[in-house]
Image 1 (cartoon, rainbow, N blue to C red):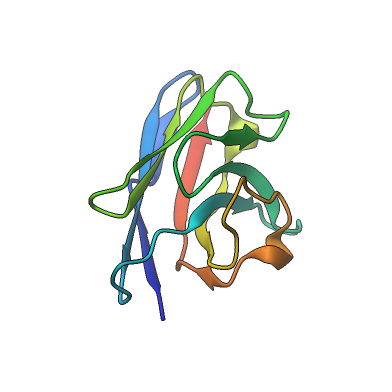
Image 2 (cartoon, rainbow, N blue to C red):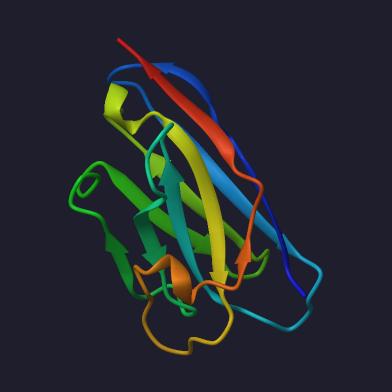
Length: 126
C-alpha cells in the first residue's frame, strides 16, 4: 500500500513559478514510475508529466512541454514538478499518481496508475 501527499500549490500571477512535491509513504523498498495529472472544473483529468522508476525517462503533455520539469529524489521517494511561465489555463487541481506495476518507462494513461494523492490546487491569475 502506498500513500501519496502533494504539496506546493497556491495562487500565482501569470508568468510566475511554482514547485509541486509528492511524498510517498507506507511501502518500503519500492520505487514506482510516477505521473502528474491535473483536472480543471468541468473537465476530465488529463496527463501532465511522468517519470520512470530510474528517473532517466520523462515525458510531458504538449501543453506544458518546455515549461514544466519533472524530477525525483529516489532516496526520499519524493517527486517534483517545477512549473515555470505559468498561464491562466494551467489553473487546476494537480494530482500525483504511482504506477506500481511498471518497470520501464512511463504511461500517459491515468488507467495505468494504482495510487493517487489528494490533489493540490494551482491557481494562475492574470
